[in-house]
Image (cartoon, rainbow, N blue to C red):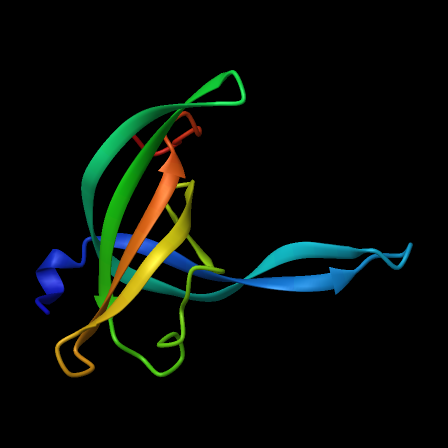
Length: 114
């Protein structure tokens, strides 16, 4: 994996469940790491669900492999350039050379860095 192709910052976030003051479970995300990544948008789509139209973009990120985030899975999410992506799939590149993350985001999210 060439260092020059890792031109974006990616925040890896782990989904956790905490209990609030009323004893109810609340899903939150904690940051696992901030890493360098390559980013490739692979598709965009417009979907109609429950009488609402929403646009979605699917993106593929590649990062260096590390034992600290090798267990990334579809319960987790990533943030790149202020856009939150839900992880759809994760696979290893080579023999622990890197990790490929396929993720989806709503295309109508505000993106401060465009």
